[in-house]
Image (cartoon, rainbow, N blue to C red; front, side, top):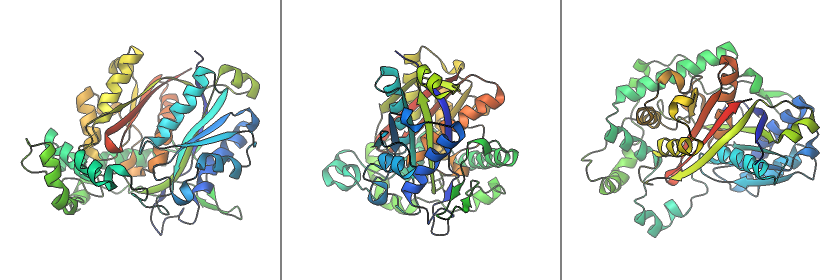
Length: 400
């Protein structure tokens, strides 16, 4: 089986996913096309060498629907011969897209492919695609459906994470992300977003709150007590050992709502020779898993164990871990269950500080950890995300 080699990755900056966010007037397809243009320009890429563009999107409706991967190819003025597809694995969509591209290369179905994702959260709201898991009465009842925030607070309750614990983690994420941005660690991988006349709209992540402290976070009200009035009884039915759910998550210790897109160029060794490019890493292995859907967010530890076992590795073989910071309790549980050193996890901050553009985040954080492996002269990283309906995806990369 051929190696799936990573040749480059590019992302947009993350813009606040609100009406006053800098990317609010940029359509989803234009966001999606931005990293494709950058990949071609900075690598002198003959795009006819690319077989497929696989894009994740977690709300694939309206302007984000209808196979935005193919739409991005055409909008970016890539060769018409480049195919496109759209995948949906909730918040893990972009990492799944990268894994899909890698699988095509490994099996010989493609010589080169791009995996990535896009989400315009300022233009397409969370829950726009509804779906059977929440909208179908029988499916929702049968699976004890509760929103993700309830699951995050349920994790904190079951694992004993206090409000102080989740706020402390959030403050550290903000500190690390602010330090990384100040030091320019993100700069080489960001493609500025421009408007229709070519003026730069956004060149840096704008969601960060570098002045955040545990004291300022402590002033925020819990975000999910209102939902809890409806859904806490459902979750407690599924977890009868819990007498009451402790609502510890706020807007400050949960992932931020942002817009953005990212793309990862994956190809064979033969492609690299044809394109005149040198690989930066290879995708060693990847895996998916399902877990209990009410709590929903515990899969990162399970899928990481599954992936490490399949790869013949242990956590000690991994230099850096990158887990999406959907909620602080998700990361705290992941580190506890894999017995990880916090200094190895999300070393440049994460989605609590930078934001989580749902269908794009997986490709973004894979790129971030590859940059950090290179900057720190380390070798191997594991990337993972929880996803809606109890799903988890993970990927191991190693430098070459």
